[in-house]
Image (cartoon, rainbow, N blue to C red; front, side, top):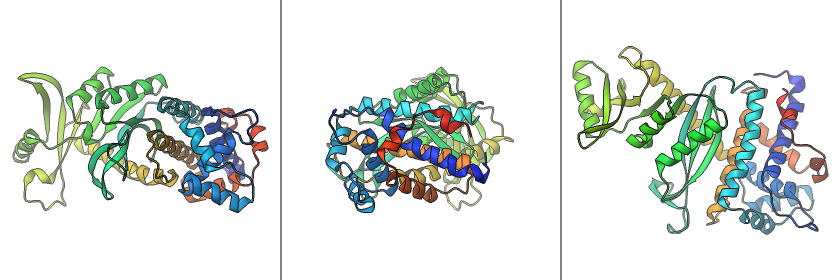
Length: 384
């Protein structure tokens, strides 16, 4: 949806102001009656840290230097954030996401069945592996530990908007998390056409959850011993579609279709390494399997872009606090979502750097009084 240039500045101003007012109204910080700061003041520091990829301390110092104005100290911001429990933080961001969904509906982007993607996002951690919420993972960026989040996103064109994000801890049950995400999507009245997952969700429990919700799914398949044998048989017979069954003892517990795609550029000597393998409950045949493989390939490209762009909104921190890191991650998610809304409204050529610049100017040029006179309303930003 491309807007006329004459409306661009007005739309941009509305979305930029929404970023602050939406976050500040969704998160009910405890502010004393005689405090010299308010929720907007706190969120200015946080949002500026996010778009500049600074720490809270660096954000406060830079804003004071640039505007020569009075901003609340980093200690105040961190203290107010730490007053919130993990559950309260997630609920606050659910509220903000509801407003964004209302905007998307007004833009007629959620009026039909949509493709959703469920993913893990890992944020490397270099502190004590025994700290709360820390998970062991494969070696990346110089560490084997991370904070992990599971997200549910709706795929809109060549972009993704995250509708739900949950923290994952060492005791989290993957199946229950997926079930909760799908239940939340239904609660938000998201009509799902297809669920895309990565290979870490290749389990019989997840397949059962898909059956429970009566949803179609597509994911890469882990090449275990049985799958490797099936690849060899498919290579000889030219039959690239097979039935895969999970079993308990000799009793089948879950089943779906797997199909194989030969990588024409692969020079691997072992046959099984030359194939990509996907699992689905879609009606796959030898002839149409290319279509479904392409659907997933496009999704992967979106996911790669999503991971890169989302980093553009993540504030830096050395904090060991699980809640504080969760808060900063969810701020990044909301800002990323609002940037996608901006890009949809103003055109794909409206790059993230340009939006960031407009946010810089707004944050240290508008006073809190102006923000307080604004009434938070999705009507104001969704009539475009």
